[in-house]
Length: 222
Image (tube, rainbow, N blue to C red):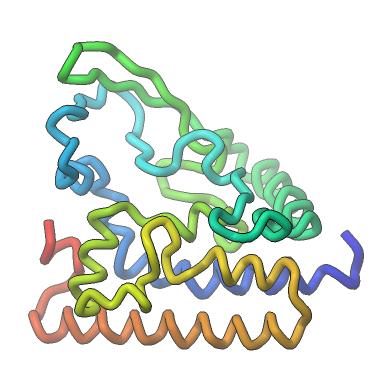
């Protein structure tokens, strides 16, 4: 990667780094109880399962962390900049070499037909959670499941201009497109806007919990 473009990777990691604490504090418990959460979906009865072995990975299936597309962006901006992708892949390889992790597998039986299904975790998935830290892919920070989104909308008074549209939490794809292709000044403005948006969402979540004297959103909604 050219030294001149290293700043784009730094900006990308800054985005992930500022989002990670929000996920950990307000949404992490949803992920830890994935099967119960997706049980709220209309199709849940039809797709109910019994886990036979391993850890059910939810969204963290094989390949999810390696999707670098920016869905909904114009065709010339619909993927992370090549220099960001190259930097992520380089640093991920170093992390994997140190940790020795290579994902894992799991299996479950579907209730509706009794078929046993085996799947593979994301390469960076472990029993302790995601190993990537600020090296997560766009999908890892962009996608929140429908129950999560519904609960955040409830907390925010149905303000989807804050939460973002379906499949684009906090308008992350737009932010990542700006980081990938716009100049430094525009990137700096977008990073500030994202931090302000995230702070507003966090303030609403914190106020919601304090008013109800509960420890987490998962506790209230599930």
